[in-house]
Image (cartoon, rainbow, N blue to C red; front, side, top):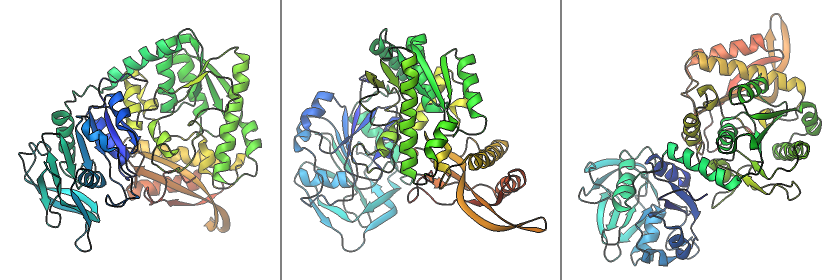
Length: 514
């Protein structure tokens, strides 16, 4: 969907902060795309990028086996910013020297001293804190470059060739620990690349609706509506574009949160006047999942059954040309697109089986991060309670129940999760915490309730803070709130005698338990 007036290319060399770099660029109201490091100079020229950012990576730039860029891209006249490995790669490719460091390696917060006359450091403080993470360093800068920043143990913390608009920083400007990192990025985007900050949600929404109207024409669309923010915003965009040509099928697989099915039906039928078909399929899904404990099998069973339901319902509606899905950028990244490893499969990424019968898939949110999807939802006029609804995976509570799934376990988890969400809202935490939910751990333990011994279920609470859902830290919830939730679950939910709190960050864990 080519609707952007200007774009930055983020070339992925396997760095852990690749998606974070993209988010920081977007926060400057500049659109960017992540592409693998082996994109050719010819492809770059054809796409008309305003600038290029090389990401970090785990390799050494002087290692022949490490990822390399097409050297011809330096002849395109496009500004380039290298970060960490990207800086070292730029140095080696253009004739400089990079060496390994035996002693005095830099990790974590580091003070740097910058040259304020440098374009990258315009209006910056002469001394500041940045985030370093490297075992190699630039020993000699290429011809035409000058050093623009140093640290105690790094003689080339930054360098630039102002005539060719090439810039390199050894540290990570994209992370929050680099105090003025966003200023450095803005200097590159606005002053070096000449970006005009035209990537805004109002223009995205209007352009996307126009694009969808033109693409769909007079054809019909079927939308996989779950009631979550992603599918809701995707559906509203299509609805604004083609109205009643869109039919939303809401597959209630019985794995939703408490009362959620009724809420979804009410909002979309009554408030938005959409063509909505609700398929009550809990028994069907539970039958397919009976006895299944392995997480990936659960996901695949649910995904395949989800598609089968769509097949059946679409046949009742006559010819349907397009399927609309709420795929967003983290789904694409975590499903192994580009240089990222597959973390878990997403049943709405990667296309449909050939026998489904749709001409194509429409994914209007495929380029957006979660917070951008929420902004688009507000632009569309979706009520805040729906826009800021907690993220919910496609397989639903199936991956929040460890082990096999039964109707009894579902009811226990629904009640426990509802209590947790209610108390977060009561204490003003529902907007502060990125994601929070309850998990049926599959663990039973001994307890004492009244005068008797019990041997019952353990519920885990999970709450994380995150800006991009690519990394996350466990949320420091006040003890009195945790106590209130625990007491309520023990007293109000049958067959639970223990509540625990998960204090693991991502990485090493994922946000979901499965």
